[in-house]
Image 1 (cartoon, rainbow, N blue to C red):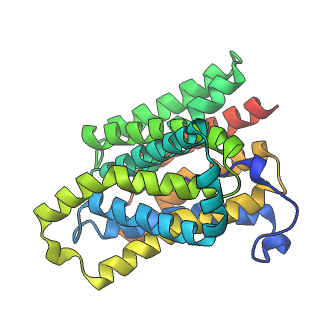
Image 2 (image 1 turned 180 degrees about the vertical axis):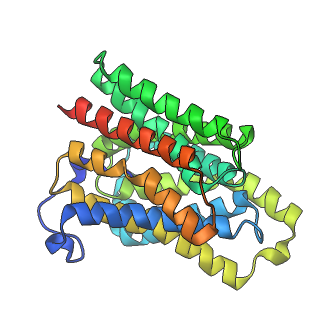
Length: 299
C-alpha cells in the first residue's frame, strides 16, 4: 500500500538492490506488506486496532523522517501552501486507508479485506482508461466482491463496509501521491504524510488504548508495532521504488494484482483463516479484473 511514484525514479540502485530482478522486488514488497498486516491482526487480542494503526504510522514517520531528515527540513522551510496542502491530502488519505483496513481486519479475514480494498485502485485504473470494454473488468470485480459477501462464513457487513472505505482511501491516496510527488522530492512527501496521518489517527488510538487499559502497552507490543511499521511501509516503499526505476508502471500494476492472493495465503499461514473454494474463486476474479484494467489503462 505504499505505491511510490515512478516520477521519483532516478538512475542507480537503492541499498545495492540494482542486481535484484524488479519483479522479485515487487513480490517481496507485497509479501512484506501482508506479513505486516498479518502480524498486526495477530496483536488485536492484546491491543485495539486503532492503537496499532498509531504505532504503525508513527514508526513509519520516525524511520522515514530520520532517513530524509536533512532534505526534509529544507523542504519544509521552503514549502508553499500548495506543497503543504499536497502533503496534508496525502496524509489524510493514508490515515483513512490504514485506519479503515485495520477496522475491517477486526471483522473479516485478511485476504477478503484486501480483495475488497483493491476495488479502490481498480476504480482508478478503469477511470483512467475510459474505455467501454473496461466496464467488463469492473463488472468482474464487482461480481467477485458480491460472491465474497454472499458466501457467508466469516464475512459480515461491518467488515465489508470498512474494507470499501479503505478502498476509497487507497484510490484517494493514488491521486494524492501523484500530486505530492510533483511538489515534494523523494521520500519527503511520505515522511510529511506519515506525520500528518499519525496525528489524525492519534485521538481514536488514544481513546481505544484508554478503554483497553494502558497496561497493554508493553515493550513487546511496542517492538511489534515498530516491526509492523517497517514491514508495512518502509520496506515495501523502498523495494517498490527501486522496481519502478526499471519496469513500466503498467507491469508494476499487473504484478500488484497478486496482492489479494498473497494476503489470503498470509491469512492462512499466519492467522489460520481458511477460505472456501468460492472465496478463492472470487479473489481470483478480482485479481484478473485488476490485472486486465491495469493493462488496458496503460496500453
